[in-house]
Image (cartoon, rainbow, N blue to C red):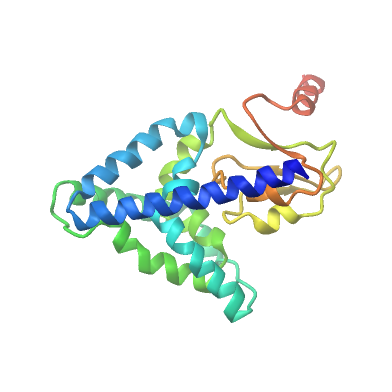
Length: 231
């Protein structure tokens, strides 16, 4: 019971941090200090190899903006979200989007483009979230997500699913906003969390009935044993 209360409390704190970060972003946007937010983003990019995509899950204004959009879609529309078409998952398309993002980002820093890049992306993010699953934006189409996913793949702190406790019920996979939980079908059904896509939102940990999802910097014992056997 106490563990569940701590999990819910963490989600409340995350929401508070997101709202405060969003208000700070709006203030900097209105006051013409867009570059300061970009510096904040770059600072979090530097710690991504240690703490994963904290920026994406806790500070990103786009992610905060999409929270009420997700709520409205699920509560009002009552529809099943569609998966993104295969072309949207193409690494070539992601590479093109990322290159365009870098060009626009540099033009924004040099003052050639006056509109903040996040503001430019907001309508596209909202439309994507309305018509497709959350993973379509967070995992495949968001250029900031692509940028942070590169160092996040080697992050020291990450979530692991303890196979000895996991029931393979799939609750964690259903609530993950970024599609960061993969399925292993053999030798038996199990789940694993891909750190490059994980937003550190703790949603999976919150819904796990067996508390099998752990945040750790160490490789799980079961993984070490498998590696030893393979050697």
